[in-house]
Length: 620
Figure: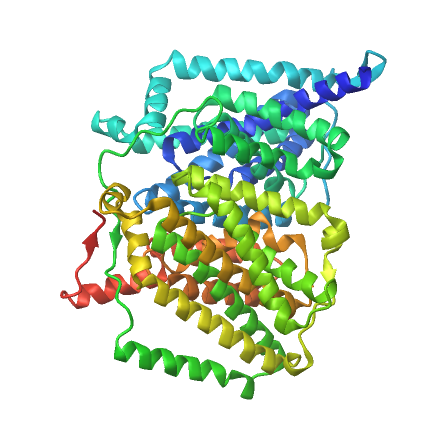
């Protein structure tokens, strides 16, 4: 019994730093509606800068002074990022802000590698808290006791800040209804900046306080942002007390999951997150979002199916691409094949995002299910490639059918977070079901049939399937079903008034997108000859969003164009520099600032400006 009690107390200690990070993320999202994907990177930066300041200034300011200075330094960096980057794109669609913070994450990761090197950096023990106490016969670190006391203290200070100051009242008001706060004449720019600085300060403080417990390393950002997102969703967006409660729940699940449910320990947290979202979408202590008082005002270009000229140009481009193996070497052919696969993957996500207004943070789940379905069909069931690819599609369709049934019952950010929860459940199953998936060792030896084994022939197969898939998605977009889907995107109330059934239409769209993503995943498995859990990771889902947003979320072809550009740049940069993330991140940030509606969207705007007949229409 004493062991379990100590395990429980250890979970409370872990909840402290998790609460600091998640509370900052919750405050930022609650006010600005920015899904700050860079929050984990600032947490990591707090740990690295904290290590440096402790090493060099501990004699002057002491250990605790260095910790606070590190958090303040990172908060200053975060403030500059908000003022120089995010402030420029607050009027752009909210997803472009996610894209910008993703670029910031890439830049910070490689800057940390450049400055501090690849080795883990373990900080010194905290003065006065270097030992352990006897707790029911079990040794327990005194530093963890400090963290247990610190978390409620920080919660109390945040509560006082929000309840006893004018600034706090404005922040709480903006969390519930930004439109009303703006109508009252509040300067939202500086309110957003101050909230962003506070959130980054809390994240950096959490990272610096972790130094005596774990070393600063280059993987801690992705790990903590995943858990922080889960905590924020379970607790309730914008609710700091809810975040505190959820941090305890998640930390205790992590502490006891491996003991009580070893087979599902990784998936346990995401199962809880999915259940909470289904039962109470706004979280344990959160509130339902206020309905917007005005239309979004987003400009959407009038979508038209290809005319005769467009069909000729598309056929010409397809012919040119098909001739590539006649003049290129095997390496370039493999690169082109990979680009084609990700064009199909991005097009499937674009169908959901642009066509239906459904933001999925977990679209890689169906890409990964397609990969594993094809691999298991080939290696375990003994099927040929010709049959294994349809099996992969069926597995992806089955996953989309089940997950989508729950997801379409929600909308907005709650829909996005539930897709993330289901994607992580799928990833966790792939990671732990070693008898079928091989776990983190993956499945290897997934090679095409003899007739398609050469790079040129597999390229032509991929070109036929990817181009056919993209063309079919376009046909569906301009079908009566596609018009129903877009009607729901533009005005759910009006669409339902004329008889469009929201859940049925969105569920069908979810399944269609999942099926095409699964086809891309199956092709990717045969291209690489292996399948790993990373095929359905969060980073793969975020990359899909990056591709769509770079192309243009308000365009039909933006996903494919964005995928071609992003994937080609990624492969080229990785092959030419050791700091590929730094270059890619800087390029993403530059493109977001210069083309806030995406590359294809910018081209359409330019073309519309030159041809006044092609007018822009507003979302009703």
